[in-house]
Length: 211
Image 1 (cartoon, rainbow, N blue to C red):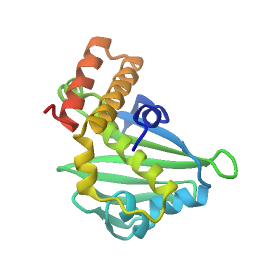
Image 2 (image 1 turned 120 degrees about the horizontal axis):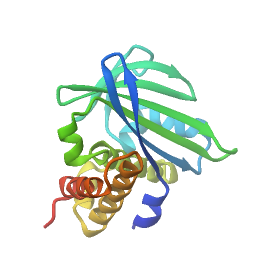
Image 3 (image 1 turned 90 degrees about the horizontal axis):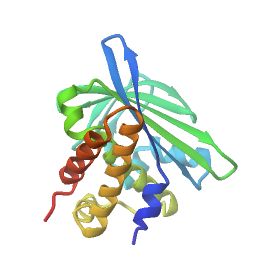
């Protein structure tokens, strides 16, 4: 049983922008503190055997300039790596390229802050439809999976079980609350409140279609 409200509330969500060579990009940031030492969180996020237990099977070269491929999901290139402080990579999915920047910071001997920024050129039409939750809710589910793994490292995530959970009443509640928080983060960044709320509702229905 997952404490949905408590789990959603552990994540800080922020929406911003960044100027890249190709123009303006939107930045979606998710951050959470885990009750685990820095080296353990780094290892959980960079070791193929552990990634497969809580995220997805990965193959390739998880080193600077190496290529990686997540089973049934994104692929890309590691563009920066500074163990155990963080790494950057391209995120290539659906014919589009975006970027992720992951940082790890110790907040005590057994507490680590994990921060992920997803940077993408997103068209105004798609942003109006879904807003930051389009990628943000996916990362919320990922951060939840990492927390469950750190609490029980020997457990193995079953993607089929997670998919079934996401459309259960509990899973839809999680996705609804996370989508709403991304809507508030979007409004805080300047999106009109009604537009941000509408995008959040559409994001919920995308991730967990109503029965």
